View 1 (cartoon, rainbow, N blue to C red):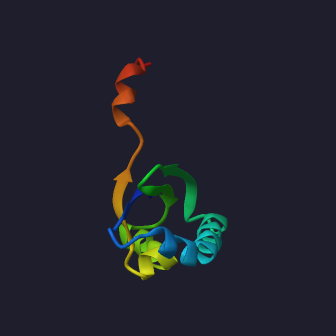
View 2 (view 1 turned 90 degrees about the horizontal axis):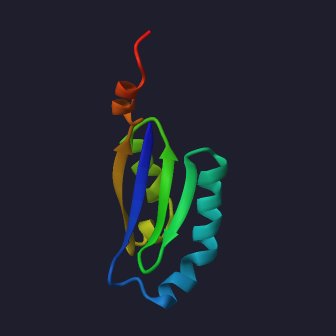
Length: 96
């Protein structure tokens, strides 16, 4: 299943906290990408990353995100939004 994971920082996420966790955060994010759990990723200014994940379930997505240092330390969380193909497009295809 495809899931958008949209980050939300807490007020306790300071530049000092980011700097302390960033080496491990980058390493673990790349690990999730190389494992195929994170398919694509982007960054939104003043909020953090957005991941498009490819996982079996929402529980698997949350478990993977929980391994990230900023989530594990409680200074970042993710809203999970499952997505599916845009099925109404099928109406535009003429029947044969």
